[in-house]
Every structure is written in C-alpha cells, then in structure tokens.
Figure: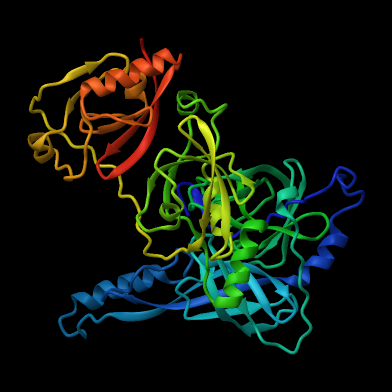
Length: 483
C-alpha cells in the first residue's frame, strides 16, 4: 500500500515488557531467536495472469527481458507471424507468516495471498508444503492458512498488545526479498497509528529493519509472544527507512478466531455514521472535553435506530468500554459478539443518557454515506448574513431545491457565501452546503438561526454546533462565534 506506505511484508517484533522486565538483553537475541525461528515460515504464491498480445509486463530483474521485447516487436511486424492472442503467464510473490497452532494453522497478510492460484509454505527446515486458504479479511489485511504435515510444528503464543509501551524492544523475523530466516531488532516507536488502511486501523510503528517480503511476519516481544503482524512500511524508495507498521495482536486475534470457525469475518454492527468531536463541538454542547464519537447519521432500521440513538448524540462508552476517540468505536463494535445487548453511555442535549442496543452482524452491503459533493451555482437568491458565523444563508424553497438538486425532505438554510477567513470557512463550510440545525435545534429560516445563536451567547458559549449537509454527506461542525 503506497502513499509512500508499502504493504511490504516486514517482520518487526515489538517487545511488551512490564517495568520489572524492561531490560536490555545482556548478551544478544540469539537464544530468543533460536526458539522463535522454527515457527516463522516463508510463503510463496503464484497466479495466472493474462497479457494482451504483447509479451506483457515483466519484472525488472527477469533475465533476457530486453531480448524478448525486441523479439516481440519483430514478430508483430512480420505479416506471416501468428496473430496476437491473449497469453497466460505465471506471476509469483513472496511473503512471511507464522504458525499459531501445531495443527498447521498459519497467519499471514491478505495481500500476500490475495488472488493466488497456489500457495506454498516453506518451513524452517526448508521443506515445502501446499497450503489451503481457510479465510481472509481485507479490512484488517489478515489471512489464515493451513498445512498438513507429519512433521512436528512449532507454534508461537499471542501476547497482550495493549500492554506494549513505546520504547519496548521489538524483534522481527521474516522473509525479506525472499532471503528467508532474517532477524532484525528495534523498538516500538509509536502506538495506535492510523495509516488510512481502513476503519479498523491500529498499528504499532517500529524502527526494526523490515523490507519487501516481510509482510505477514510476526512482531515479537522479549517473552517470545506475538504482539503484531507486520503489514506496511513508510518508504519513498520502497526500502527500509526505519518506519514500519504492524497490526496489533489484540485487533487480529478475534478476526482469526472468526476465520477459523466460519471461514469469514463476522463483525458487530451498530448502524451509524460517526465523526470526531472537536474542542469547539465539545464546548458548544457543554461536554467537558473533546472525546467520544458523534453520530452524524442513524441508518434506518439498524440497531442504533431501534435503540433510540439520534444524530448529534455523542457515544462516550460502549459495553462498558470508554470511547476516547472516534476511531475507537468501530473496532469495539466490530469485536462485540453478534446479538449481544450492550449499554451505551451518550451525551445528548447537554446531559448524559444511557441506552441499550442489540448488536447485529455487519453485512458487506450495509449502507454508507456518499462522498462530499459541493454544488456550484452563481445565481443570486435572497440571503441573510449571519455575521457571528461568517456565512450568508437563504431559506430552502422549491426554486432553491431544484437549483441545487436537494431532496424533497431536506429542510434548513442554504449557505450562499462564506467568509474564507472565518472559522466556518476554515472548517470547510462552502457555498451550497445546507445548515439544518444549530445547537441541535432545527433551523428553517434566518430567525431560527439568529435565535439559536443568541441562546448560545446567553449561555456563554464561544462556539456553536452546526449540522451540515454537504452533497449527500451529513455531519456536525463546531464553529467559533466571531461576535
């Protein structure tokens, strides 16, 4: 995965230690390595791809590629040559994995085995075994394989990744560049990194040297426990620059349990679209600090709707687990057993409320909110300036609805102009957006908006909470008052 992030298989073992255990190895990592190496495997895959008439793209390291390209050009120029036909060729890739069960279960990254026709596992004794794909999960980039062999296998245990601290030692074992059995060491550089891989991002960052081919390899602590699975690197060049990422073990373990039992991932589903809570949003509604996950939209007929959750509610805890940041909620919900009824502590209209919701299974076709689309229309409409917000607005009527392609059920104030230097402008509010709530109170006209702003000032609020519809995306924005 490049964005300068590369799904490049890297083994970096992060060492989770208690204060009493936190020590530099007195001699070396040799004893630990000798114990762990038999559990780390090399994974190779092959798949058939179809090229279009020409020789197709070749790996830069493939021998004679220049000769073959020249031959192909001459062949196409020869009128007596056979007509171009689609050709099939084998494409191979390499990665890493590790044994978690002596019965032959092996963990690796999904991107290592995705679309593979054939998967082979090479053990530490160089024996090669065909592997069956038990299941895979694209959202966490995890796959579960199984081999059958009479050979005794060495399995490694899981550690508690929640106990890993920044600065702990990390040891990585994997298969960089197909070399196999490579050990590197470093420290945990950061925790809980979000690298935009998906909504369940929870990565350790490590400076252990990892490269292409380490994907799917284990990240160990000094107790020889797996605390992460190496998944991506940050690298402008494609090589190690000391910034690697491993998916936390506690995120991966329930996924693997589901894959093993069902052959697919079963995740809990609440049925909401959520967003982060900014300091301005928290201040505007009387929350002590920016925390929790704000509900931007409740999906019809979902668990949240049936539980009475509403847009504007802030989920502070879910099933007794605190939600300090918005991105914590998807993971907590996903890990909740299907059909379990849980307590939700929420912040609503300036006070705490407790509701109960029954968690259902997430379906892949669950509705999602579309991307932002900002209308652009230069025609003028009667507008009112809301100086305290730095915007000018106009009520929505039939003409506005048609001009801006608004749905029949959309009500509120259409933003006509925005002061780019205002906080509203800096927060991304644009011409064509619709404000339908201020301070969680519906606004249908300019008088409604002015009254809501006046009430916020009377309550000594420095910010107000706006509910904004931008294209087909709805969300809340905390905006500082200018007056």
